[in-house]
Amino acid sequence: MVVPLSKQTADGTDEEVPLCYGATWADGAAQAADARRSVRALLAHAPRTGHTVVPPALAMDAELAASELVTNAIRHAPGACGMALRMSKQELTITVWDSSTEQPAPKRADPHRIGGHGLHLVQTVSEKVVVALRATGKLITAHLPVAPPRTSSPPRPSTIPH
Image (cartoon, rainbow, N blue to C red; front, side, top):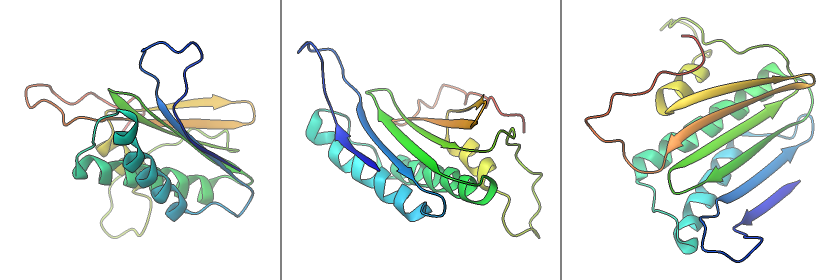
């Protein structure tokens, strides 16, 4: 199931309304390429709704984060999974949910290992990563700024231990 891009306001005010997108995939149907395409579509649609044009480097970071989070859901959790994208004037959040109740943990760097680098990559390109465990699985949310960071601000630490 896919929820199309939307920008809606209940009361017609000029308050900022985030741009949202969601997708749910049945067991075995999720693909990282779908996640990347969804991010590209949302970011391409954003300027038409009054949102900021995201610089190409940040757009690539967002695609990478979505791809890695969906890949981890495919590899480490049985069953259905889903992704929600939410873009405000300040940030893009990428939330992926899956059926595993295990707390994700980045693996130590090993240049000889194939795979196992995804969560570290997501942490690297995100301002913060938050994991919310649920009785039936978990939500992992990557927060990415939609404007380039100021050079005087130090990067914020991730909430997942390194």
